[in-house]
Amino acid sequence: MDQLANWVRFADTKATILTAGLGVVLTMLINNSRTILDAMGKSHVSAAVVSGLAVGTVLAVGWTLFWLVRAIGPQNKVFYARLNRFAWPSLVRATPEQLLEHTSHNDVRADAWQQVLDLSLLAERKFTACGKAVNGFAALVLFGTACVGASMLFTTA
Image 1: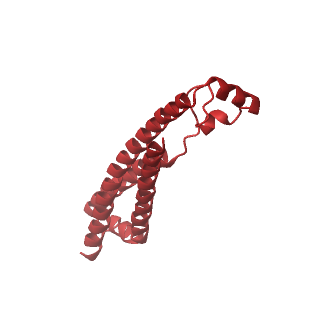
Image 2 (image 1 turned 90 degrees about the vertical axis):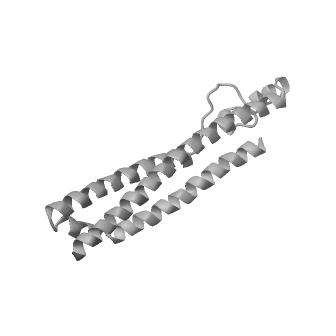
Image 3 (image 1 turned 60 degrees about the vertical axis):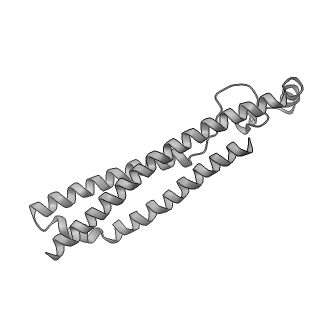
């Protein structure tokens, strides 16, 4: 159970690092926003090129942010109605009497294995979302860098 909990934490750590990277790239884009806007006003060609790259950048930001929120978002539900001494969401509305009843009639190993399965599903969800966020982040870096680079070329030309 501890090993699977560590995998969940590892996925959260990856998503957190990626979120910091997103902040860095967004800061670069915001710092260059005047250059991007100036390039859009230079000519029809510069407006078309820079606008296309800017749209790709905005779409990549949206995609990345969506999947990062999915990866980092807390899991506070279980998909069964029974109690599990290791799954805090199943205990939220339980009474002490219900817990005593549950623990006296249910093997601790059954609860532990159910928690292992729950953590496996959670880790899979988080790593899937992380993978999609990484793809979006790569697209963001490519589009954002190209957008700023093209803007600089058009404004200095």
